[in-house]
Image 1 (tube, rainbow, N blue to C red):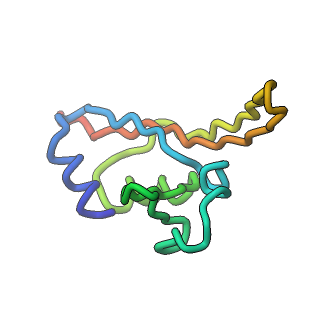
Image 2: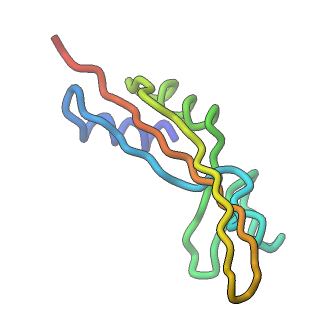
Length: 106
């Protein structure tokens, strides 16, 4: 995480923002993964080889503020129940949305 956050910090101007949206812990996508796809805690590999991680708010906060110069502007979990009416299927989705800011120089 430290390398990724440092690369983001190098790319941003003072006062710049990171707008983050990704999977939250226990999203339907995480629940559907088979046991053989687990790489590490909450870290999985898809059939096409791409990796996916499922975050918590506290984890995300720590990643950005501990490993980089960012300050937290806002973090929220977007929980939604989506219903496929044709198949009568309920889908519980969790996404994390956050804004982190690079300190402005004076």
